[in-house]
Length: 578
Picture 1 (cartoon, one colour):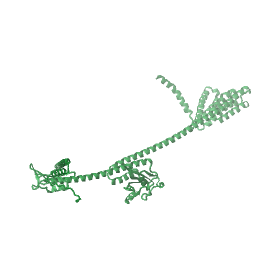
Picture 2 (tube, rainbow, N blue to C red; picture 1 turned 180 degrees about the vertical axis):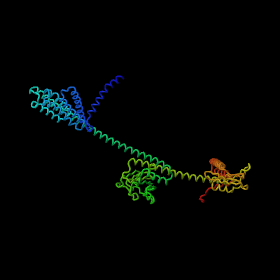
Picture 3 (cartoon, helix red, strand yellow; picture 1 turned 90 degrees about the vertical axis):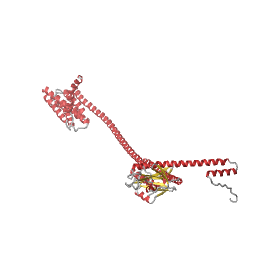
Picture 4 (spheres, rainbow, N blue to C red; picture 1 turned 30 degrees about the vertical axis):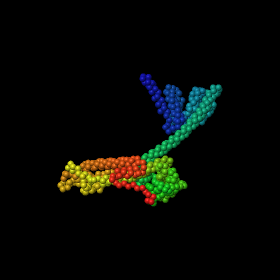
């Protein structure tokens, strides 16, 4: 922990100085290009350091006052220009002024020697110029150095011996300049190549980014389209389910077909929906229901299409779906004046037990309005309508058969009980004061007559009268047929029949009806069993005779025994009678 604190303490001053130098050498904010900002910042950094150094030298060495003031002026002015938009002028001013300063000192005679003037200022200015100046500016500076160096003996106030040292110093300065020019040109060439490569890479990245964005956009569009299709398909399937549930609740064909066309049109937004049924002769497809105004007009005139004519007729004849995405280009399309706005049409067969019994016709005002998925959904709808229609037809047939059976059975029950009542020796029974009496004749009370005729309960309230007793007549019903009446009278003159009492008498009457029916059926079964036994015995005796006389005698005796005291005559038929 102490080590980290020490490191922070040592790094903090350096970081502060670095931040300060960065702040003092920052270029103008309007300069945005990276290379230009670096050149301006480098100029500011070099001139700032030189300004500090020259100022310190001026304080420490007052004897070189004139030279240091000139250099300090050059550095301050170049630094000031580096912080502005005119930093390029500052670069040229600094490089050429700093270089020219050496030759000015030769001209003024303030330089100690030619060699010291060249090596202290010119070499440094050439190195700095190679970093800041452009290639042309550096070449111009080298040419200036070469011209000023070779002509120095002509204007210099300092003694210059034209010899090996002069040419060596001048050659070194010019050589440095040439080398720096070559190095700068080479560096700029390498930088240009790298920039070209970077630009190429950037272009490739941009192309790749563009392609990726395009692919992402295409993929996004595909996903959105897929989501739209999925949502549309889900909505269609939901509509099919809801339609199936709604259709399944209808049990009458006169309600089924109009409701189906209306629901399909509302849920899917189709212009016209119609249902055709194939007639018994398989010649025409007859319109049964439609939702549009034109379809209703067609219904009023009993519109029908011959099989094979139009999209509907083709579907009814072949049992295959037929779709016309552009009715104007479809060869078999039937132009119906009642539906002038039709642009596309699809006809789907309604099949039952392998036969085409009808056609679901759907028309739209838009061209190519039906896709493959729409065809599948509409096919499912057609199948649901077929199933619902078949179920409704079977239900109606079952109800009709059940009604017929019920009527036959009621007639049988009515006949059987009429025969039973006719054979009965009494009209009914009466329970009174602990005794059971037989009725000599049927009751003709108003409430009894009402209960027999209408099959409903009739109660007679006394309202406190002592001359008339409270009575209730409950019909005894067997499968809807009245076979008797349960008549109850109360001895209480103030009796008012309550609902629970009436319900109790009705329950007793219901159970009495079933009990009497069981008793009648049991008696009928006994009679049939006795009859079958007599027939079996007679057949056995007749079959046991060996000649015609014995067979005839056994037959007559058995018939007399079965019929009880009847005269039996058996006669052969002669040829004359034949």
